[in-house]
Each structure stands twice: as C-alpha cells, then as structure tokens.
Image (cartoon, rainbow, N blue to C red; front, side):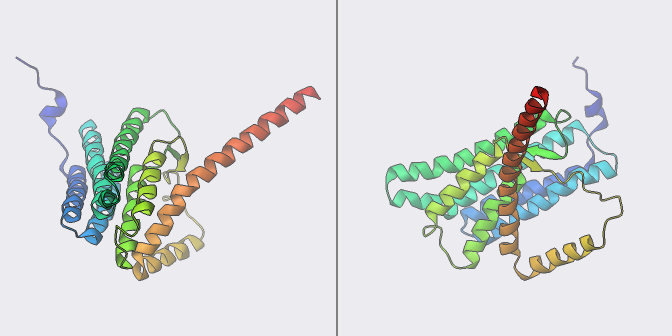
Amino acid sequence: MTKISDSAKKGIYLLPNLFTTGALFAGYYSIIAGINGKFEIAAISVFIAALLDGLDGRVARLTNTESAFGEQYDSLSDLISFGLAPSLLMYNWSLHSLGQIHPVMGKIGWLVAFIYAVSGALRLARFNVQIGTIDKAYFQGLPSPAAAALVSSFVWVAVDHGFTGESLQFVSLGITLIAGLLMVSRFRYYSFKTLPFKESVPFVWILLLVMIFVLLTLAPAKVLLVVFSGYAISGIIFTLYSLKKNRADKKKAVEDEKE
C-alpha cells in the first residue's frame, strides 16, 4: 500500500488558504468581468486579489500556519490573478482591436498578451527556486502583483476618462510588453520586507500614510497608476545606479593599488 505523507494526514491550514482562495476568486472574477466588457470592475478585482495575496502570507506567519502546500497554492493563485487576469484584461479591452488594422497586428496583440502571461509564470517559478538564497530586501525582476497593478491601473484610469481600448491600442501594446519583460528582467526592486514595522519610526511616517490614504480616496485609479509606474521605473534606476557605483568603486580600488 502507498504510504500517506505526514502533510496529507495533517490536512491543510484553513485560515491562510482561505485568503489565497479569495485572491484566486478575485483574479478569476476579473477574467469573467473582462470577457463581459466590465473592464473597470475587472481592474479593481486584480487589486482586491493583490490585497488578499498580501495578507495570506502574513496571516500564515502570525498564526504559525506556514506550509509547503500553502506556498504552492499561493503561486498557482498568483499565476491566475497576476499572470492570466491582467493579460486577458488588456487583450479584451484593447489589444484585440489591433486585428482591425491587419491580421498580423492582431496576432501581435495576442502574442504580446501571451508574453506577459508567460513572463508572469517564469517570474513566479524563478522566485520559488530562489527562496532562501537571495537578499530578502530586494526582488529580482518586477514582482508579478506590481506588474498586474501597473497594467490594471492603466486600464482603470483610461476607462474612467472615457478612453476606448482601440484609441490606446499601441500604448496598451507597449505597457503590456514592458511590464512582462520587467518581470523576467534582472533589475532589482525593493521588497519592503525590511521596513521597521515593529520598531519606532519618525512621526512624519504617519503623516505620509495619512496623505496616501487621502489621495487614494480622492483619485484611487490615478494614484495607483502613478505609484506603480514609479515603482516599475525605480528598479531600473536603482540597478543602473548600483552598476555605475560598483564600476567606480572597482576603478578606485585599482587606482589605490597602483599607488
């Protein structure tokens, strides 16, 4: 008889996996909403998925209910919510209209959407195999939730301002391709895992948080687009600055040795 593993005997932890299931549901609902032409709701659903995805891991750590099953389930959920959902949202809203220009352009449209989806899958796979071996303070490549937020906030802002996907089809093409390629790039992005949540911080931090909440209340779509666009650019700037600094340090070290 086949032996039953210890994890199978113990079952699974309900609370963190409940949040993961909620994130998966929001991502799946985003796909359904996008197919039905409810693009604003589809974009908002991606952000709900991101919020729930950010909570499941923290809940697991706080309640000491982390498990290998939870990690794998979370990755599969992320693939749906931050890989497939944003790519299909952008395709259904805008990229499909490229076929009206020429059949070849239509193929380019869905191929770019596929590039985004497969980049999300590769990003998640690379992250899983690098756990425990890389600096926790930084991500290698744009995190898939941030890429999904960039794409979704762009659609949200465009819909809010009455733009059609057809009128922004080339902008959509560029944003989808760039977001996908940034996920599999080697640019380093700050992970925010080293923020001093359990330590005392200057009072100005509270004021900044209040300002963020106020801005999100007044214009959530615009604020989210600005924030995640800035985050996507930050990794490029930080990596290029680090490379330049390392070259300068090596050059200085060589000069010091010659002296």
